Amino acid sequence: METPRTPDRQIRAVYDAETITVYQAYDAHIADPALAAQTFVPPFKKDRMTWIKPSFLWMMYRCGWAAKPGQARVLAVSITREGFAWALANSCGSTPAPDETHDDWKRRLAASPVRVQWDPERDLHLNRLGHRSIQIGLSGDAVRRYTGEWITGIADVTPLARRIAGHLAAGDQDRARDLLPAERPYPLSA
Image 1 (cartoon, helix red, strand yellow):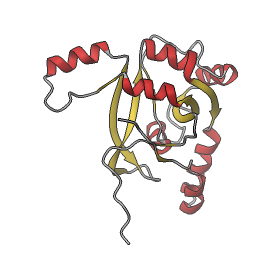
Image 2 (cartoon, helix red, strand yellow):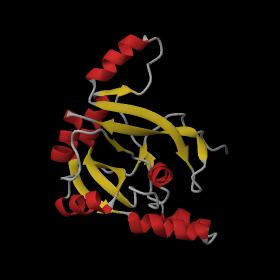
Image 3 (cartoon, one colour):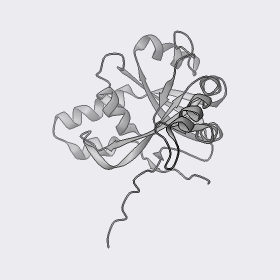
Image 4 (cartoon, one colour):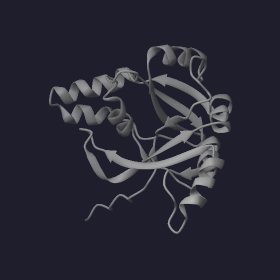
Protein backbone atom coordinates (compact mmCIF):
# COMPACT_ATOMS: atom_id res chain seq x y z
CA MET A 1 0.00 0.00 0.00
CA GLU A 2 1.36 3.40 -1.03
CA THR A 3 1.97 6.03 1.66
CA PRO A 4 -0.07 9.18 1.01
CA ARG A 5 2.00 12.10 -0.25
CA THR A 6 2.36 15.05 2.13
CA PRO A 7 0.64 18.14 0.68
CA ASP A 8 2.99 20.85 -0.59
CA ARG A 9 1.71 23.18 2.14
CA GLN A 10 0.37 21.75 5.37
CA ILE A 11 0.47 22.92 8.97
CA ARG A 12 1.82 20.13 11.16
CA ALA A 13 1.96 20.71 14.90
CA VAL A 14 1.53 19.40 18.41
CA TYR A 15 -1.97 20.39 19.48
CA ASP A 16 -4.94 19.40 21.59
CA ALA A 17 -8.57 20.55 21.73
CA GLU A 18 -7.65 23.98 23.13
CA THR A 19 -4.03 24.76 22.24
CA ILE A 20 -1.32 24.49 19.61
CA THR A 21 2.43 24.51 20.28
CA VAL A 22 4.70 26.91 18.42
CA TYR A 23 8.45 27.38 18.81
CA GLN A 24 10.75 30.35 19.20
CA ALA A 25 14.46 30.59 20.01
CA TYR A 26 16.18 33.36 21.95
CA ASP A 27 19.14 34.07 24.19
CA ALA A 28 18.76 33.51 27.93
CA HIS A 29 18.18 37.24 28.58
CA ILE A 30 14.80 36.93 26.80
CA ALA A 31 14.04 33.26 27.49
CA ASP A 32 14.52 33.35 31.27
CA PRO A 33 12.08 36.25 31.94
CA ALA A 34 9.56 34.68 29.52
CA LEU A 35 9.73 31.35 31.35
CA ALA A 36 9.33 33.06 34.73
CA ALA A 37 6.36 35.16 33.57
CA GLN A 38 4.90 32.48 31.27
CA THR A 39 4.61 35.12 28.55
CA PHE A 40 7.03 37.43 26.79
CA VAL A 41 8.06 40.42 28.90
CA PRO A 42 10.90 42.96 28.59
CA PRO A 43 13.53 42.84 27.29
CA PHE A 44 11.33 41.16 24.62
CA LYS A 45 10.27 43.97 22.29
CA LYS A 46 6.58 44.02 21.38
CA ASP A 47 7.16 46.62 18.66
CA ARG A 48 9.16 44.20 16.49
CA MET A 49 7.90 41.34 14.35
CA THR A 50 8.21 37.99 16.12
CA TRP A 51 8.11 34.71 14.20
CA ILE A 52 6.39 31.58 15.52
CA LYS A 53 6.89 28.14 14.02
CA PRO A 54 4.70 25.06 14.62
CA SER A 55 7.38 22.76 13.16
CA PHE A 56 9.97 21.57 15.69
CA LEU A 57 12.41 20.47 12.98
CA TRP A 58 12.14 23.77 11.12
CA MET A 59 12.93 25.51 14.41
CA MET A 60 15.93 23.20 14.84
CA TYR A 61 17.10 24.13 11.35
CA ARG A 62 16.74 27.81 12.19
CA CYS A 63 18.55 27.63 15.56
CA GLY A 64 21.04 24.85 14.75
CA TRP A 65 19.81 22.56 17.53
CA ALA A 66 20.02 25.50 19.99
CA ALA A 67 23.64 26.24 19.08
CA LYS A 68 23.40 29.45 17.02
CA PRO A 69 24.24 32.78 18.67
CA GLY A 70 21.10 34.54 19.86
CA GLN A 71 19.09 31.31 19.60
CA ALA A 72 20.60 29.11 22.29
CA ARG A 73 17.32 28.64 24.16
CA VAL A 74 14.36 27.01 22.42
CA LEU A 75 10.92 27.67 23.85
CA ALA A 76 7.77 25.64 23.21
CA VAL A 77 4.96 28.16 23.46
CA SER A 78 1.45 26.84 23.96
CA ILE A 79 -1.14 29.23 22.51
CA THR A 80 -4.89 29.07 22.15
CA ARG A 81 -6.22 27.61 18.94
CA GLU A 82 -8.58 30.60 18.85
CA GLY A 83 -5.58 32.94 18.78
CA PHE A 84 -3.85 30.84 16.12
CA ALA A 85 -7.01 31.01 14.00
CA TRP A 86 -7.13 34.80 14.44
CA ALA A 87 -3.52 35.07 13.29
CA LEU A 88 -4.20 33.04 10.15
CA ALA A 89 -7.44 34.93 9.39
CA ASN A 90 -5.61 38.28 9.70
CA SER A 91 -2.52 37.30 7.73
CA CYS A 92 -0.98 38.30 4.46
CA GLY A 93 1.38 36.09 2.50
CA SER A 94 5.02 37.10 2.17
CA THR A 95 4.54 37.12 -1.60
CA PRO A 96 1.60 38.23 -3.76
CA ALA A 97 -1.29 35.80 -4.16
CA PRO A 98 -1.92 34.38 -7.66
CA ASP A 99 -3.56 37.02 -9.87
CA GLU A 100 -2.81 39.78 -7.32
CA THR A 101 -0.95 42.89 -8.46
CA HIS A 102 2.21 43.82 -6.61
CA ASP A 103 0.62 47.15 -5.56
CA ASP A 104 -2.51 45.44 -4.21
CA TRP A 105 -0.35 42.97 -2.29
CA LYS A 106 1.81 45.78 -0.83
CA ARG A 107 -1.36 47.55 0.42
CA ARG A 108 -2.66 44.31 1.94
CA LEU A 109 0.74 43.60 3.52
CA ALA A 110 0.91 47.08 5.08
CA ALA A 111 -2.56 46.62 6.61
CA SER A 112 -1.96 43.14 8.02
CA PRO A 113 -0.54 42.50 11.52
CA VAL A 114 0.43 38.95 10.51
CA ARG A 115 2.75 37.68 7.77
CA VAL A 116 2.75 34.08 6.59
CA GLN A 117 5.47 32.37 4.63
CA TRP A 118 6.01 28.77 3.63
CA ASP A 119 9.56 27.44 3.86
CA PRO A 120 10.90 23.97 3.02
CA GLU A 121 10.24 21.54 5.87
CA ARG A 122 13.29 19.75 7.26
CA ASP A 123 14.10 16.14 8.01
CA LEU A 124 15.90 14.82 11.08
CA HIS A 125 19.26 15.87 9.58
CA LEU A 126 17.81 19.29 8.73
CA ASN A 127 17.87 18.61 4.99
CA ARG A 128 15.15 20.18 2.84
CA LEU A 129 12.05 18.12 2.18
CA GLY A 130 9.71 18.44 -0.79
CA HIS A 131 6.88 20.03 1.20
CA ARG A 132 6.68 23.28 3.10
CA SER A 133 6.12 24.36 6.68
CA ILE A 134 4.42 27.54 7.83
CA GLN A 135 6.19 30.38 9.60
CA ILE A 136 3.99 33.11 11.07
CA GLY A 137 5.27 36.63 11.70
CA LEU A 138 3.36 38.63 14.29
CA SER A 139 3.52 42.42 14.52
CA GLY A 140 1.54 45.25 16.10
CA ASP A 141 -1.83 44.12 17.45
CA ALA A 142 -0.97 40.48 16.79
CA VAL A 143 2.08 40.63 19.11
CA ARG A 144 0.00 42.28 21.83
CA ARG A 145 -2.67 39.58 21.51
CA TYR A 146 0.00 36.84 21.46
CA THR A 147 1.72 38.02 24.63
CA GLY A 148 -1.41 39.23 26.42
CA GLU A 149 -4.14 36.74 25.49
CA TRP A 150 -3.04 33.70 23.50
CA ILE A 151 -0.12 32.22 25.45
CA THR A 152 -1.21 29.54 27.91
CA GLY A 153 2.28 28.32 28.83
CA ILE A 154 5.95 28.34 27.90
CA ALA A 155 8.36 25.43 28.33
CA ASP A 156 12.11 25.31 27.76
CA VAL A 157 12.82 22.51 25.26
CA THR A 158 16.50 23.34 24.88
CA PRO A 159 17.56 20.15 26.73
CA LEU A 160 15.38 18.10 24.36
CA ALA A 161 16.94 19.78 21.31
CA ARG A 162 20.44 19.10 22.59
CA ARG A 163 19.60 15.50 23.52
CA ILE A 164 18.31 14.83 20.00
CA ALA A 165 21.38 16.50 18.49
CA GLY A 166 23.59 14.34 20.72
CA HIS A 167 21.93 11.14 19.50
CA LEU A 168 22.36 12.29 15.90
CA ALA A 169 26.03 13.08 16.49
CA ALA A 170 26.45 9.56 17.92
CA GLY A 171 24.78 8.06 14.85
CA ASP A 172 21.69 6.90 16.74
CA GLN A 173 18.93 8.14 14.44
CA ASP A 174 16.27 5.90 15.98
CA ARG A 175 16.74 7.31 19.48
CA ALA A 176 16.79 10.84 18.05
CA ARG A 177 13.59 10.24 16.06
CA ASP A 178 11.84 8.73 19.10
CA LEU A 179 12.33 12.00 21.00
CA LEU A 180 10.74 14.25 18.37
CA PRO A 181 7.47 15.93 19.34
CA ALA A 182 4.50 14.06 17.82
CA GLU A 183 3.35 16.54 15.19
CA ARG A 184 0.32 15.80 13.06
CA PRO A 185 -1.65 17.66 10.37
CA TYR A 186 -3.48 20.61 11.91
CA PRO A 187 -7.18 20.89 11.00
CA LEU A 188 -8.19 24.18 9.42
CA SER A 189 -11.57 25.60 8.61
CA ALA A 190 -12.09 27.35 5.28
